[in-house]
Image (cartoon, rainbow, N blue to C red; front, side):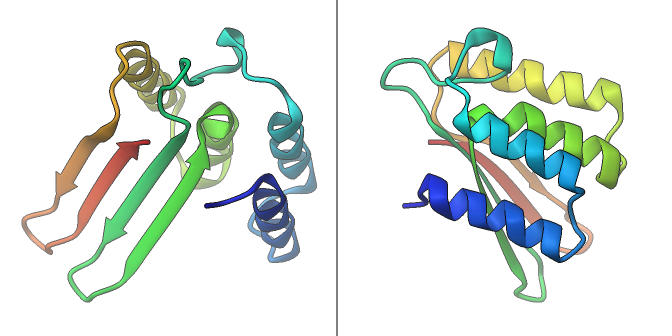
Length: 127
């Protein structure tokens, strides 16, 4: 299980590696301290999911696992917009889909994408 301390250390490591700006890191660290509220983006309902988990498996065996507390999803998507080329429309669509899934109490795998051409697989879970 990942703790808040682990999450903070991971954010600071990303700054050290140049993968994240100090400003974005400050927003992420602040979001870790902030209580979950409906206006702060996706948040779990009582007894509902607390984590967004993303699993990427490439045909060559490379695996990537991303585990993100739901309360950081909105901030993380903004970072993805800035550094990963995610546009405003895609960000809004992702947030809307996550908020709907959370509101409906969904958990488990909510998205699975398989690239038939090269065998890559991406799975997104709410837990």
